[in-house]
Image: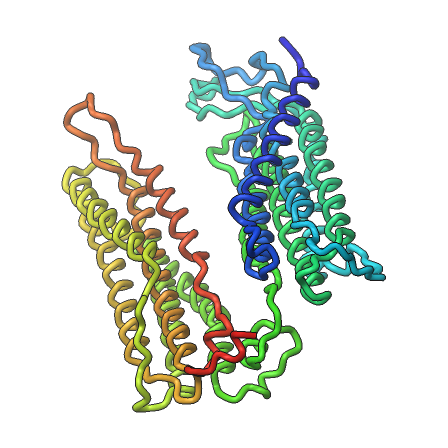
Length: 554
């Protein structure tokens, strides 16, 4: 068999890398930067944001998830652990899927740092400034990323000592059992070599770009403090995506190590490093960079976004009310955990749909409690409520409409499955009707509580000692939180229903079978994405009293 042609691999990676760099540069120049507004703070934010988004899009290692493993070949002979199916070990390692994402992530951030607009002025201001990489790395994030890289290195070291074993076909053994087919795996040092090369490229490239971020020229349109914040933002986004890729490499090693041996009676296994990878992915997604903005004349806005600003200078309750609503996460997360625990205690009756529904109800009640607190502390009885022109963004209406249609169709299918007695994986109450009554009641219960909270938000008195614009923003943000929670819950319930209660087989055997499990997984992914759907941020205009535009014109 042919071995690895390293020259072809180099040409492939180089070609894709150069192409990705050109695409990124053109995207940043044509769609992000505008010649007329190249110095505006908004366009600088867009450049930094899109650099991170494009790098994240290139960071997927999905194509290499089965690296080092090979499937059993069909055989009519009885299973024999001593039989090793011939396979080229290197052919099981998808090198492009391991190296191209790593190189692309580094190249995207490299191009992003090199493509800032050049100074327009004929005169350059000399700045005597000694900058080090560590000055722009957030300490908690830096230590976390270092720990993730060390964990990945330890996993690869462990991997290098793992032995190979053959695949196992399904068939009768000498004990009369019918084992499930199991993948075989190549010698661990081979996979460790490939993953180690990717991890080394990632670490070296990350350090190179970090050095570039610290040493590149400052933007003439920004103040020294803003340039410092911009460098911290670049470091933040680079380290987060690098940590995600490093943990993904460790997860690939974990999938290899979790594979049972041919003589193992195990029928399932857990990739613990894969679970760690999911935790890292979620943590890095939440680890937001600092906000790049300039101080305004409004002390309320400065309290939220400018470090060191004091709320004592604010002339009204706007900053305090905004901070209260921003702290909703501190109440929602514990409420979700407690609700999931209560739902799990009733798992025998309501199944997984009960866990999702009860957790959602607790989250909605936590939001309701925050609204009660806002009304009690800052609302003025009898104060006119500010009218909303736009209640929710259009994608939210579309998402809920899709969830509603899908829920109706899934419940109708569950009714047919229950009536026909077809095979399903329902884990709740042992009754045929439960597989459509319980999800339906759970979805309606979530919707009813959500509508009640929405009504409370809409009827809340206005804030008497705060600008009307801020009152509208707070009300709209609260409506968005509730709609996002309810819609995400419906997609989660719909996904569970599609996975556990497959579509009833058609009477015509020639008709294509609807793969409900795939669409159920897709619904669960949409539910997770809705949880992270960003809401409208505060702006200086929210803290400006009506008729006062002085601070906005400066």
